[in-house]
Amino acid sequence: MSKAIGKTGAVRALGAMSGTSLDGVDAAMVVTDGNCIHSFGKSSYREYSAEERSVLRAGLGKWTGPEVAAAADVCDTAHAAALAAFRDAEIIGFHGQTLAHAPRQRGTLQVGDGAALAAALGKPVVWDFRTDDVAMGGEGAPLAPFFHFACAKYIGAQNPLCFLNLGGVGNITYVDPQYQHPEEPGALLAFDTGPANAPVNDLMQERLGIPWDADGKVAKTGTVETGALELFLAEPYFARMPPKSLDRNDFAEMVTLVNELSDADAAATLTAMCAASVAQGMQHCPEPPEVVLVTGGGRRNPVLMEMLQVSLDCPVKPIEDAGLDGDMLEAQAFAHLAVRVARGLPTSAPGTTGVRACVGGGVVSVPEK
Image 1 (tube, rainbow, N blue to C red):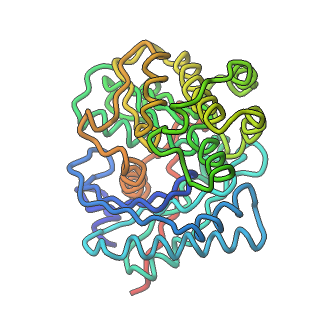
Image 2: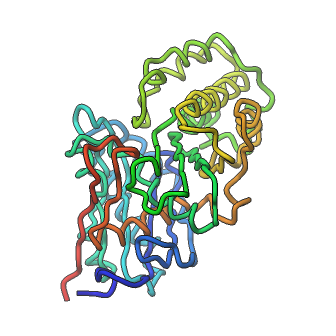
Image 3: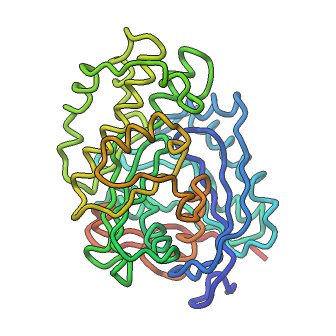
């Protein structure tokens, strides 16, 4: 048994993430024992080509078929290329690419072959993180909260705070660092707040042929259509108590609400929808957090960040202000979770996914010697 799958000691773990924003593969090293973060290592980003992004987009929302197989091939090829350079990694956390997520109906689908990746890279790979959680009644998402708990300890937080990830879908983690372990009742509350960058990205791609609204330049020149915003906030999802999760396309009809608007007004309205859904979600926090630390691509959108600051009753800061890397946090999370899975530690709890009991999801694939 390798040291990485042993029971004690810090190991060099490599995590990879390809999110629903379909921008590329993030890869990052973390030195961790599965409980505490000892240090952060190097990272890299492998952007998808326009053709690869098109193949992945074609697979979204599908469970089987040639589009899913093609998306899996793109995922595997891109990850093998992105991870090969990290020769000193002792274990790899491979999330794969989410194509469909319906935990209460069909389950959750992340394509990507962890066993093939282990064989190609010659290292243990932990993958298929979400299936066990869903099988035990959980939402299967979000999974980063246990890592967020470790991050709160790492930065020396003393009071409750929130980590807000704005990728394709938005999710929030409320952390009370007074607890000793993430699985303790009250230590964490986590859930998807609503759509984040995905609708704006789709709008930009469809109307302007560009993958996203860089720096919020399009939204900045527009006006929010309050009627569309009110219709959006009337969606039943926002009245549901957390934990709860979303598929990337659960709010696809949002785009129809802005069909008649100009590019700028549509972008401004979709951006406002993201901010408003976060404000709605914050009402579920047990007590007001000391700060909201924003990670993911959304933190680079000054229009969205200003909307959040106006609508929330606490400071809203990019996570870099706390000394963490907002581009790599999700990849780092799966590095940390890989070690937890390998050592039999839980990766989700009732407060993070609604699972009936704490569960350590994931499959460990070890390359043949």
